[in-house]
Image 1 (cartoon, rainbow, N blue to C red):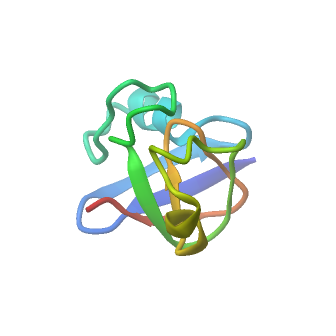
Image 2: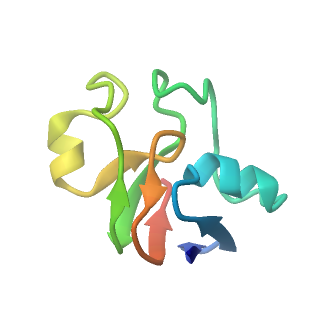
Length: 90
């Protein structure tokens, strides 16, 4: 299954089920999101999921705190879509 990922104010790209948002973003040749370590440790790819659902393993609480996760934040390098998404990267 393929999902449409919209980054508010930037553009859209497609992401396959089971594919990380960062891998799909890179494969699409998009330049909408920022990335750093790509390993879940730096937090550079932190995004807010405005609409839709993602799946992610347990996130590094330094890069994305439990409080941030409660408010819809996740790390794009560690997350896979479960639906079409609308994201915001501040």
